[in-house]
Amino acid sequence: MIVDALPGLVLLILGMLCVLKDMREEPGRVVPDDWTTTEGKVVSAEAIPSGEAAGPSGAGWPVYKAAVTYEFIGGGARRQAVFDRFEEAARGDLDAVERVVAAFPKNTIVRVAYDPDDPTLSVLETKPRSRAIFALGLALLVGGALHLATR
Image (cartoon, rainbow, N blue to C red):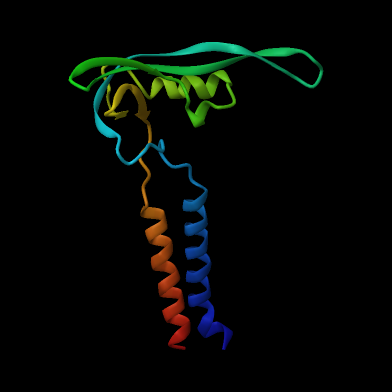
């Protein structure tokens, strides 16, 4: 009967939604497996103008990007780099850029990934990927399938 199957169907639907949400989530920076990760420290973070975008009427508006300067020890030397490729601020609107800048106050400890063969190549790891939503989704799918199989 449908009423008996309803809890299983609800679990399956919730599980699919969790798995889909996880699949749509942007991962952290993708770096080669042989890169080294280390601790770094934010030197500065600022919103900087990066050009102008044209609207449909031809009128333009300023576009900004978040630039975070950080330092780390890589290849036996102290290094400094700037990271400015934040998905959260990709559209360049000042509010989004300022939120990114606010998340990186001076002296904040950050994770940095760098190429051990060329430590001048580095990226700021801004958001490690959590698989908790995916795991929850799988558990709900299994629970829903078990519920339906035992009815």
